[in-house]
Structure formats: C-alpha cells, structure tokens
Image 1 (tube, rainbow, N blue to C red):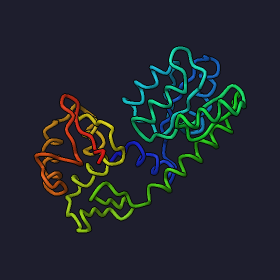
Image 2: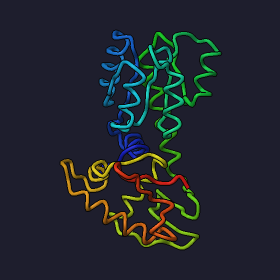
Image 3: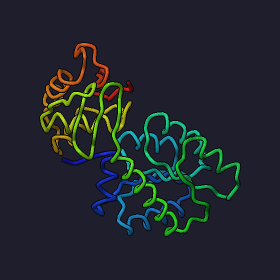
Image 4: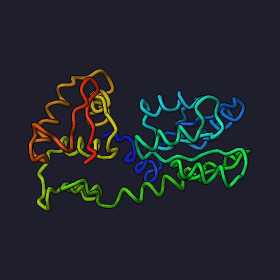
Length: 241
C-alpha cells in the first residue's frame, strides 16, 4: 500500500524513505540552493515561488512537510500558513529573514511548527525537517478518537463504541487513508493510487463500492454518513465529526 500524508511521513522516518517537501520561496537563488541541498539529503522537493502556487501544490502533491518563506510577494507567508493550517495538519517550517520575535511569534500563531532564520544553512533546515518528521511519526502511534470511532493505527484495530469492527484489508486501508487527514477531500483517483496502488486512470467504481461497504460497518446510518462523507463532484473526506 502506498501511503500519503502523515502515514507517508511515518514510513519515511522509520524506514529511511523519501519524504516529500514543498518549498515556497520567491528568491530564485535561495529557492534553487535549498532545492538542490534538500534533494541531496534524500528528499523529494517541489519548489514554487508564490503562496498561491504553494496552496495549489499542497492540494495536488500532499507533501509531508512545507518549508515556507514568510516574506512572499502577493499573499504573504502568514496568510499562506493560516490557510494551510485551516485545511490540514501538514508540518510547516517557516523561513524568516530576521530573528525578529514579532515575526516568529506571528508565524507560530499562524500555525507554523518551527522556524529557521535566513540566511538558511541547509544542514540546519535539514535537521529541523527531520525533527518535525520524527515528532509526527511518534504521534501516529497513538490512538485516534473520532466521535464514537477509535482507530489504533499501530495495532490496525478499529472499534465503534468500544466494539471491534471487522474490516476487510481494503476497507481498512481506505479508512486509514481518509482518517489520516480529517476534512481533506480525496479524489477517487488519489484513492485509487494510494489504496489500490493504481498508478493509471483506474476504475472509480472500486472506490465507490468500498466506501459503501465501509459505511455499512462504521456509520449509524449509511444514508446519512458522519465519518466518510461525499463531496459531490470531487470525492470523499473523513469528517470532521
């Protein structure tokens, strides 16, 4: 199973796999230098020059961590950070041009997880990225509670009001995929690639049928789902409950 979001982060940390970094930096020299350095350290880097581009890539690429410059033209990094945090829990490391406490505090209040002061030393940024990914990996071992549903990712056990729910492997993978990023919309194609490992344009009916089976097992009323919700014209999302 190919995992995305926070599960991909855990795999990268524990197994030394490739983590996906979204770099948002408007200075070409800084952007190219950091992209090269992080790539050499084994990351898969997507580099863009504006906040608007970064928000688009966040939805398309589902990165494991975002490196975000605060002083961007147009939409600044503070607003980008707020918007990212409103739609998901991807770790955000901000780049600030000076060690100004006001900038740092404002960035952290906007939702950033860490910061690095410019001029950026690649080894420092690399260390911060590894640290935030390790924290995410540790968090993943904990039980998740969503309303009456409890998900034990480490033990691969799902209970509803304390009663174990028997899920087929594909149903379990689908639930883990959706619940890893509550509120985020997953297209059918994204689910085909991550749950079924279909790297081509697969049959979306596989997803729809599995969703119906999963709802029958975890929802009180599968006709009015609380957990696995349909977003018409886009796909599915988990909750929020």
